[in-house]
Length: 392
Image (tube, rainbow, N blue to C red; front, side, top):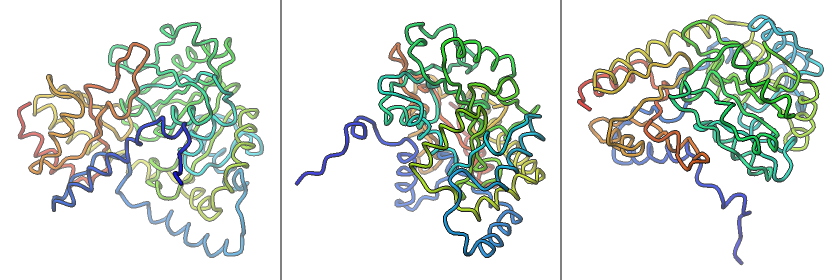
């Protein structure tokens, strides 16, 4: 008997970050200790007060049973209070917030609730793979919107063909942007809504990097409007809680209701003791400021070294990524492979691996590699020394 995978699974390639992990393991198998800038998984420990809150809640909740599908009231109230403090946005915990198991499952599964077969979903390229993969699993059609230096890595709404726009169901936005680090203002979100609303397009705003910034605090799409908008958030980067798998959606109550109904049929909720830890994390900002200082220090070391090596200055305004132009005459994969040489042992993600070809057949990620600023400051300094010695 031959077990056959579904066509929707065989039609897609390997997950980009799984391929990066394989490269890391290959180096380790050769006895080389890599400096891993590949996957955006912080190595800094989750702050002690959050770990203590989780440990205490594990005991307090020892007989709590299944968690709420949509998040405990305490968690949703903490999210509402944080959104009010951070963005000045008022949210009803009862109807405008739902917990998620991190943001990946939320991004991926949201399509199951809003996309019908054949619907178009507008996805930024480069961008988070679940935008497109979730669309495909919901039997929709991803349409890739190129993010390039020419447009300042912002979506160019005027360039979207009207025959595509009128069939679109969802528009994905991601600012602060991964991987470019670009930050947008309220005027950009107003432009996005002016494009989306007349066509009945849902604006799905992935704001997972809103708290990793190096200038003025970025705004949320919810600062402009709530109707027709669903924001996706996470504590993975803000509070170094990737392993806790805790996030939330917030926004239009109709969209939250759709998301909740979808989610209730897929999973059994985020463990309540982890929500308690998240409540502690949301109530404290000092550790987030500390992370921003650390990422800034690593960003400055790495970008200065890359410039010294002869590459363009690609210093980002936000996020924990550096979206670096590769040397002339080299492809993304070639430069990433060059950096894997044992004398350098630096792991990056080729830009072409996290971007999909657009309508013109071009891959907007080609010509770049992504550095995730997750190694320790000491390892970042060591990588910077190795890079600064190059002449590219």
